[in-house]
Image 1 (tube, rainbow over the protein chains, first blue to last red):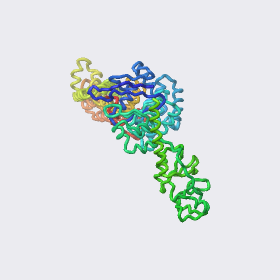
Image 2 (image 1 turned 90 degrees about the vertical axis):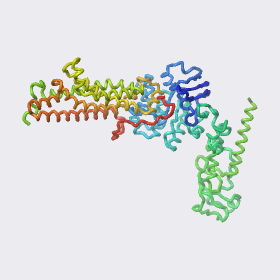
Image 3 (image 1 turned 90 degrees about the horizontal axis):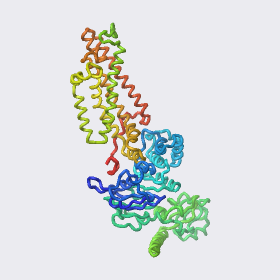
Image 4 (image 1 turned 135 degrees about the horizontal axis):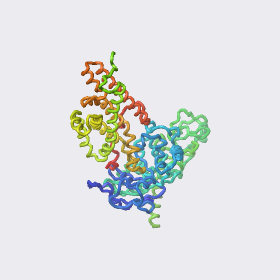
Length: 376
Length: 232
């Protein structure tokens, strides 16, 4: 565990970058430092590997003061990923990744083997090993940056806005990749970003900092969204925090109905049995084709070319309530289509039912918190 | 072309001998200048306030005519090659110091921060990261310094036949043989072009990591990432 204990960074000109900050960063999880520019998040990160020395306070790594060991030893035990990757443009990809192992005295062969292994791990083609950084795309360079940080298998990974210089599509890919890697590796990651969405997506714990380097709130993302500590945090989260909070509720328990789901060759009785104004028509395998209005339907031969589009389906259990609601909002009928992993319809659900599920989920999470309060 | 390569005996060298002498008198000062410029430039990078006065001083020294240098130096080093080479070495600083400083400063902040964060000490970081990345800019400076040094050597003729190929210019006047002057000018020009080409080749060999076809001197300096950047 990294323990930041009332740390202050004051520069000679009197600027206070970090103001009496205390944080306990749990092991094997992603802790995100987020805030507007000038909130001291990068300074805080850089105090952990002593690229910036605190004016006051101490930082403990597994109970030991980080001042207690030579600074280069400390840094070599912590991976560091930076914006724009900061690759050595004069070294090949494989040599970039092998940098820290080589400094730690590994043989050339072993370091290169390790580098090749890491390239695969972060999703890079090993054919790129002999290339130079300028020959890679921004996203690929950032993957090299992550591989380089992981090369000596450090327990701690410091990431300073690593994905903010790449385009949104690549960024999403890198974020998903980081979460997947973290599942495999279980590092203690401290991640700095100014992007609250990124913080909420990646963080196990999120520390929101405000200008002047003061801690505004330190909480898991779901709690941040449901109970922002003050107006600053609320503003920083943005206007749609209610919607975003739905990402943390599962869609598994939604009350699906199959009444309105009919195959294209349905009988007149089957169609007549539908009470809803719309029917979801499926192909013989049970995959959705589209919506049809109940009035004026002819049995046995539903004209599948005149159906309304069914939009995007969601997968109950995998997708969140937010995705389910989004599907319902996008659907021309206001009903979301639920499918299984193979794309076969398992039922449909209305906006109203989703709304009820949201209210139930809120009540439940409040009760949980109250219950936890009593238990304490 | 009668007597084009027929060098007067008082120069004590054949044509080829003059070429060797000329190369030695022009290239040794550049090498010495580089050895001097590297630590000076590093001090200028380390202590920013030092750069303007150092730059000013080298410019003033560059403005001092070589004749004036000779007058001072001749008391110490006599009518020797060394008297010619010392001013040339000093002159090369005016090109080399800014080239190295710009090159080292052009290393992106992220790269420096990443090196520091990976546990590079200052010396290792300078030798393994900053200097290699500054190589294209340094090579560009070396090319200018080398070519200018090759042409400046001729002035050594003023202190008694220490101007290598430049001595041919004086001999052309003395013996009324204009072809010797043509010889001197053409040979110096060819030497300058060949040396320049060799330096370009060396640069290409040293920097396989540069985008092909990009004849930029070095990466443009990027804006500082954060107010908490390492240079703070």
